[in-house]
Length: 372
Image 1: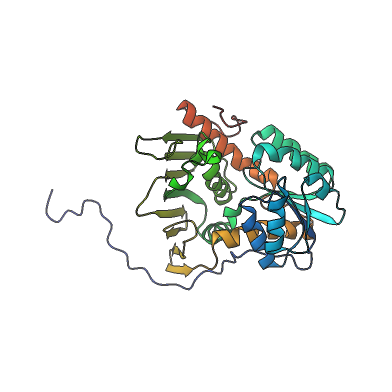
Image 2: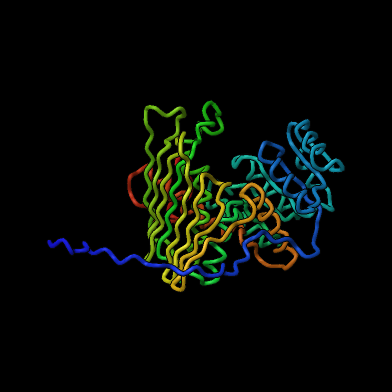
């Protein structure tokens, strides 16, 4: 091989800077619909719900929690005029409450979701929506029977970087998506000693990565996944029990989505998402979920960095409730409807089964997560 051989390397491209594409990625609010909302479950995550609802001007009229003092604490902190109940059934009896936000853990949540729909309320369910796809389909059918909306709090969809990506792709900016790469190295060691997390067999693939399975469905709209392969590995130096190292490959007839997680990265955290399409590439990069300052856009005519506004734990919670209220106002299905979210759970449950068996799994075949 001669000294002049370029080893097949392409000549360096000089990219022209272009104007930012017009992508409206910020959360939306209804034009005039502002119903009374009831919150069921006043645990730790409820603070982010209430804080962001208040910022949007949404009206929370009642809070229920089985430890009533927690509900009273949240009332005093955010909505001093709200009613407080120890039994959520009493909240469901309040006629002028039209929408309920249901936050308890999945096993406790299922009967509450049913009873909320039976009481004639529109519902926002915490994620993961259900632990059984068949039960999820029954809830979707019940909501349709009663002409009610049921949505899932997949707030990651409204994280600024994910919201920009899905809106840009939906607009056709980069053509058909051919590959998505999620690479995450973050420090999850804070779960040490917390039974609610350490007891989850596949904590990373289930409790955390459910957001990434969900955003995968958003980015790959119009393409049907054929199989999922996943693996999960733990190591002796971990400070918590569930495997910290996980990877997933989701195959489509003409595309592929790849995920890589290290949930035990104590130094040098990074979160990178790269989406390649037939007409361009989009990339987001930051040190964490709430630190994704811009989107890199690469098109044939040039490239640009688009600064982003907002953060996951603001825009995310504003977006989920805002979209549900807009859907009710406009009498349409919410983009994060329970029916839509079942597709995300199909991917998640398939990945969990694959990690258990070492075999590829077709989405929809695994109806529940594996049990210990």
